[in-house]
Length: 159
Image 1 (cartoon, rainbow, N blue to C red):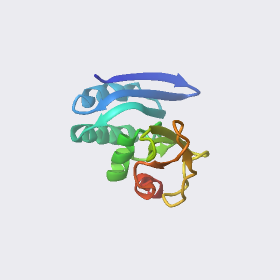
Image 2 (image 1 turned 45 degrees about the vertical axis):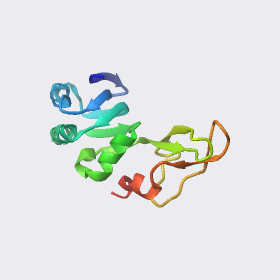
Image 3 (image 1 turned 90 degrees about the horizontal axis):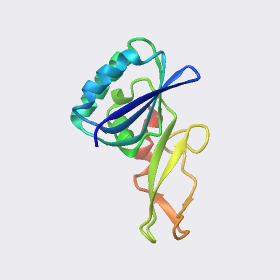
Image 4 (image 1 turned 135 degrees about the vertical axis):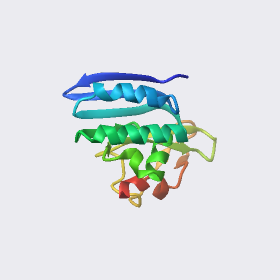
């Protein structure tokens, strides 16, 4: 799947929907995106399926350029791939506010997997050690577990 980037303006914010991989090809798309963005930008990562090392470099360079103009930046619907990069490489996030992330839950009883959206002000923990509400499996009713260790997955909250 190729990269698709759409910008929708809403309430004074540029909402950027990024779909596809963040890879070597991303550099071209991101350089074309930069001049189109205003002072308030929301990135939606719901449809990002992978991030590789070339993409990380391109994204970090893009974020550095984006932040030069004192923009307000929000990340929302961050996939596990994005969360992993944010936790490993703080400059991937830059000064962006994380509004929401997906966490993959797994049921040990029936093997069902489900992505749960954690949103700031609702169910996103305040810090990595806050603990999460139990999640029941929609397939069998058993209690599910977050695929990653909570403290590690939500480490970005401590930064």
